[in-house]
Amino acid sequence: MKFFIDTANLDQIKEAQDLGVLDGVTTNPSLMAKEGISGKENILQHYKDICEIVDGDVSAEVIATDFDTMVKEGEELAALHDQIIVKIPMIKDGIKAIKYFSDKGIKTNCTLVFSAGQALLAAKAGATYVSPFIGRLDDISSDGLSLISEIRLIYDNYGFATEILAASVRHTMHVIDCAKIGADVMTGPLSSIEGLLKHPLTDIGLEKFLADYKKTNG
Ligand code: E4P
Image (tube, rainbow, N blue to C red; front, side):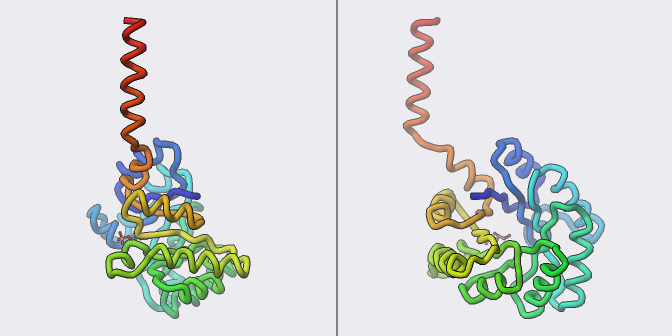
């Protein structure tokens, strides 16, 4: 399972990269705004800065919603760095754009996916990644993890190469459950990755080992 971090914060990306288990980064316009990144030049530079830190795929989202402008924006993003994945929303023109990029060998991430039907379309269009937003489904009393299971079944039935990128992961149990179901990738906050480290018996055990060592070695 690949681990992506879902942030545009360079310090957090560095911290996750230093841990040695990071496979990529996902961003979106809200995450960029949260870091105060605005203006085309600054936004493009920020994507390049992220690519310099992380050794893996970096999703950069188009803002346009019509095919022609999506293609223009996506080509500009893809030309920034070979790690860039063009993130495209699940709308009609988005599917056309994913097909266009797929035919040109440019990698894409189909975002804002909330149903198995949408995921099927994204795979048919040749998306590299499909991003079902599990946390946002949970937020409205729907079952995000069931959606991952449905997509896994459909993709396995037909051998689609599109990778299931479980997005809107909110906490560590989401990560573990997605791993059990067979999501190819998860993207979440640093806390959802660091939470995997924690167990009280590890802390108690380590304390005892160190105390016993100290008793005999001073
Ligand atoms: C996915 O790529 C999105 O950036 C993200 O996972 C959305 O998460 P949120 O629902 O926590 O905003």
